[in-house]
Amino acid sequence: MNNKVLVYIDQFHGEVLPISWETLGVGRKLADELGGDVAAVIAGQDIKGAAEQAFKYGASQVYYADDPSLAEYRPEPFTSLISKITQDQSPEILLFPTTTRGRELAGMCAIDLESGVLPDVTAIELQDGRVLATRPVYAGKLLAKAFCDSAPQIITTRGRAFDKPEPDPSLTGEPILVDAVIAEADTQTKVVEYAETVGGVSLTDAAVIVSGGRGVSNNPNLTPPEGMDEKQAEIWRAQQGFKMVAELASVLNAAIGASRAAVDAGYIPYDQQVGQTGKVVSPDLYIACGISGAIQHLAGMRTSKIIVAINRDSDAPIFKLARFGVVGDLYQILPPLTEAFRERLSK
Image (cartoon, rainbow, N blue to C red):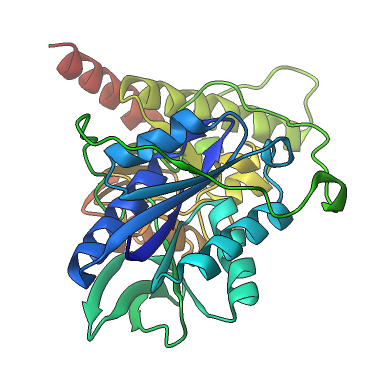
């Protein structure tokens, strides 16, 4: 096969991340325009089922390494595998989903393959056989278009920036088993354990996100339990505010997000932070509650399709980006808004 495009499929314990199928869809379109095929590569243990899925999403060929040394993600064995397959197949384009693993692998593969990386791309077109990629710069304030002059052209695609293809059950194939490149004994890092977050909707995959900021703690009518100092009382008020955020998120089957200010203040765990130093998201609907709109936060959510802002300060920067804005106290706005959604969605 003439594989013009190679796509890395990101999985965790056999479960493929949805953004991987979005990236494979991009690869399929690019390969069609280049007049070639698109191959997928996936690594792990007991992943043949996941490898077979890739055919249904448009892969012409699938390479999979199924080995105990790849059971847990570690950058050295995964990078070596992808780099070797790329060298063997010589694709013009190498695509990764913009996940934590995808970003790391793209950078490390670029070193092995002596190429460059176009990261966090939100739009792609071909010009004279080269990829012209659009990506946000300056904390998302501007969009830049760039080429990668080296080969292969390595690109990471932002989640939910591209359509996820519908799986076609009629598309099947037999994935090609390849050997791991680095033996377990030669891998310098070991995975000791995982600390899992139970429940909730994934921020990066969510179609709807409800986020809270420092404003969730600004309710003077709430009386904290006796014995709390000022900081403890602030966090307690914020937790009551985030309960309202969580209730609205539950009604909308949404993920819960937060600004960096809320995370730094100890209101909510870091894994729910949206922003330049948190998670970059592109949901269909983003509801910002008590978030003023610092540049760092806007960089992580400005590509949301519809942004709704709820804030007491009519001059808050978030309103410049929002399509709909509500000026007022979120403690008075969220309960009736939640109830209205509940009634509407129950019909």
